[in-house]
Amino acid sequence: MPSGLLRVVGTFDLGQFWPQGTSDADTVKVKVDAGAFSFRPHPSAQFSVTHAFDNAIVKGKTSKPAIEKEQIIIRLQGVDAPELHFQPMPVVQKKNQTPQQAAGWKKWSHDYRQPFGESSTIELGQELMKHGAGEIDCRVETAVDTPDEVFDTYGRLVGDIIVPSAGDLNVNQWLAENGWAYPTFYASMTPSEIEVLRRLAGQAKTGKLGLWRFASNMVRAQDFDTALVFRGKGARPNPAADRGKVVLPKLYRRLSTWVVSNRSKMVAGSFLSYLADKPDELHLTGDFLQQGPTAAAIHRLTEFIGANGAFRASPADLIFREAPSRLVNPNGSSVTW
Image (tube, rainbow, N blue to C red; front, top):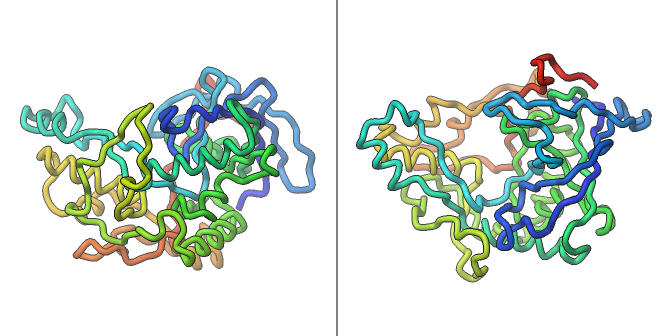
């Protein structure tokens, strides 16, 4: 488990969140200046400014600058809010698609959203507006030991956002506590990070707060609403209409990709067979906390989905193994502190 801590100081614009902007509840663009990054290798050490990320490139499923136009993208760690806009990627590359597949993809591939994708974003924006306007100060923290552990495979920094003007409000924890995001854990997290979010999300679930009144465990083609799409920047919020069964976003993303690909004649067979071809590996939370990431048994996501589409697990009881990324200099060499 990591013993180091990376801290990033910056600001973020409240106007980025929907409906003023296009950002959703669990992805935040943060502006940073020179000297924004500092690192301490263990709890008793002092923070020291690091320039490890200057001109660095994240290599994963994408290749992108760690800092782009004085901005980093933060993926809030440990929580997953309902999708505001998710566009599936084709399982067959464009150059290899038949005319029928290309026509099907054009017809069915849209920016889809889940129920509560709008509401969770609005609720977060309203909470933050109580403590500032326009751009507000923040700090981002993530427990890591090496630069390679900081960014996910899509080039987003994974961590917690804390707002000093709100009494050090932890945005990740606020979303979990108020039921506006599902707990979604990864093996890169520390036990204390997992336990806090697990407890807060459990309280929200018991109290049926936020999305929990409409939480669903069914993952089937008939449960995917192709009419529910992103309404775009500037649309008028309609919370009363933003209701419906909401499944764990990780499952929703995979279901939407399968539905669109199936209708486009790019994949045949069931949703379960599609998942089995590209298996998600995970640990059980209790086993992970007791045994650690190297000794805990590895499971497949398909083990927890029945033939009828029922998801037979609680989100807080699973810890996913994340796709790796590397941080390199422009010359391709590894980045160190």
